[in-house]
Amino acid sequence: MTDRPNVLLVMADQLAASFLPSYGHPVVQAPALDRLAERGVRFTSAYTSSPLCAPSRFAMMAGQLNSRIGAYDNASELPASVPTFAHHLRIAGYETCLSGKMHFVGPDQLHGFESRLTTDIYPADFGWTPNWDEPDERVDWWFHNMASVLDAGIAETTNQLDYDDEVGFQAVRKLRDLARSADPRPWLLTVSFTHPHDPYVMRRHYWDRYDHDAIDLPRVGPRPVDALDPHSRRLRHVSAMDDVEITDEHVRTARHAYYAAVSYIDDWVATLVDTLESCAMAEETIVIFTADHGDMLGERGLWYKMAFFEGACRVPLIVAGPGLAAAEVTDHVSLLDVAPTLLDLAGVERPETFDGSSLVPLLGGEPDADRTVVGEYLAEGAVAPIMMLRHQQYKYVWCAADPPQLYDLAADADELVNLAGNPAYADVAAGFEKEVLARWDPVALRAAVVADQRARRTVHAALRRGVHTPWDHRPAVDAAHQYVRNHLDLNDVERSRRLPDRR
Image 1 (cartoon, rainbow, N blue to C red):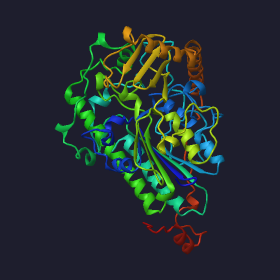
Image 2 (spheres, rainbow, N blue to C red):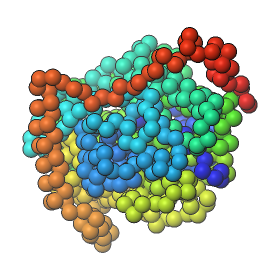
Image 3 (cartoon, helix red, strand yellow):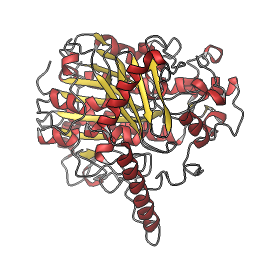
Image 4 (cartoon, rainbow, N blue to C red):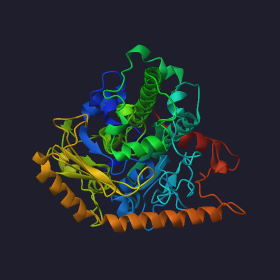
């Protein structure tokens, strides 16, 4: 493997592993990701540490669980004092850059990145703070509802397409700038798109790649209300899933648009990889592709994320680059492992604070089948912390407010049979519960979450009075030194900006 390689980290938003052809989906088309998987290492059992955008990303960047860093939901602030992989790599001599979404909340909109090429698509303030003091409350102006499903279809452009078009354009330009730069440092470029996150809408160019009648419906249809676990019932309320009738045609149309959005992301992956090759940087660059969480996309009658069912919490993770042999890794891994892996690739010692562990041994063919994946959910739809443990064939979900859930995914991939109350699995369930209570103090954690929510609601209410000073990132453009200017020598400008195709 290349010593101190460059790293191109590409993230999709709300992309479940099961909706990629390289993970077995028979309909979705993603040839660039297929090629990446064919020459790289594909992790088949990778999980988010929290099935929600911001907390997932915060934990991934910090290498620590959300309960440890106090960043619980989509309006939580990742403390500026928490080191991220961008901080660690920057200290180690890397140039670090972000193009796209990372859902940072608060005044620090960089968190170790030396530069950030775009603003974020979502607000940087505390407006989306959940309220566990009022668990039945629906905040209509920012909670999910079913409009994304009812209004799914084709559009020439959308808010999200405007955003991702810019993210991809800026990332490609940055790769070219890196190739013609005199800066000798290795680099980390994180490129984070917002698709295929709902709304489920995509351009006709991508929509027409699919036969509408061939779009598959969910494997598991809506469950009877009395068969739902309490958290699933809460999610149906939070996202107003029972307020409208969702037909099979609604589901097929939403999934069609989602698949088309995956193809859109795949085209950007192709463009980024092609740019690496044309700039002669491919042989020095590790490419990592992943997502922050998945999407239920109608499975079990549920939509979006916020749960620990496989559709919402299992994510793709593909690593490819020089010195890596093509392989499939079935051991359980987590987005918490991304930070220690990046530091390991850069030759940086792993901090003791990390909750994840480096994947470099697995990349080199050293399996570790006894790995345990840990997850938390601490946001809207919950009334108390929800914890998840994934070990061997089992997944265990625990919440003080709900009965526990235990699934044998080797025998029950669709998670239809809760074994937690089965006497034959009493010892297994008891062992998992003991581990949960050893890892967490659920009472203290709930108190910390509620106190933090109250504080943020107070701050948000105050900052919306009088003069409003937003925290949203505002990318700086030095137009005086762009393109041709009369204080610059035209010949020098043209010569320095020309980059040959080096394939």
